[in-house]
Length: 483
Image (cartoon, rainbow, N blue to C red):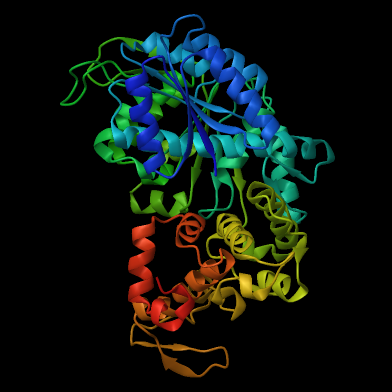
């Protein structure tokens, strides 16, 4: 379980943060000052339970938050740091981000803001940990920064990354969700002269339209209801570094016009502000929809399309490069076995055959989650068919492929089986009932029917597990679970 370190000399606030994070399912340790935090980081590394995220107060006696941030970045580069302050300014936030913080929150911290910030920090930690190993693969040219594959199209991706990285050229990546666009963006940044400067990422599709402008360009105090203080936007935080805008296809026409100006002039105004700011930012964008079709339909500005389509990188879906699945599966298994402290050495041939035959509509992200699940549920030194989801074992090819081939559901309540026969399509809740029941039973057996450990392994709370067991009739099905 990822460990979170809370560093604050205010014991009341530290305790409140610790309680909230424990309720969220995190392993938490609180420290009163920077010196104690550094000792905890060293001890965690030696004990095999390293800290993933650190929340540090900016104002502390002795070593303040920024000094602690610099020391942690030097000694423990894999730790993602979130800075906390009761009197934040734009300048302090920018300085913290440039020193390596992944986020900057103002007290009193809102629960949802902290939850989202921790989620981003954990993701950053996972990527940073991968980079330590995978950056070495750049030298052998058989993979880079989390993208692994010998497929010729992936080799072409590696070549393009190395070619464009030294410049400030705008890059547009195209590919389905889960194909690794974020990792490619980071690889470009890491191989560029800006590697020691900020890398800032924003998924445009996940931000409501009313807030997207503020996220990108910032706002001044009083600009709108709830704007209690000045807030720097992503472009300002990325100054001298790289900004990655994912799902750019979801931006509204009005936002597209603002982006066009920033890309052309590298200047903007914060929401509600009058001061024009200039930034030196390398821009990488990504889309999971064909922009040419959106331009033709009028949903995407043609001038913006031509402005961002300087160098394009196409990421193939995983189903089109099945030869890369074994290497990716082994890579993820090594990672999750180490995290879980398990001795899992590989895959049975039948399990690997099933993985290679599966379509993976969710691409590499789906494969990663699937291997994590298998590592959690496995009770043997190798992954077997019993550790894989029913859809993979039964050889289902996934919705995306069925839709592409025209053999998907027709809307009549019927569909084709593997032998071509027409059969009834079950309602989704019925179709998912048996796989969900099997997953929970497998997890219970793997954890010797300890319900708390089972809930932790499935990443749900104990109450949710009880409700699911009751609705799926698991208590009645296995008397060993009684009581």
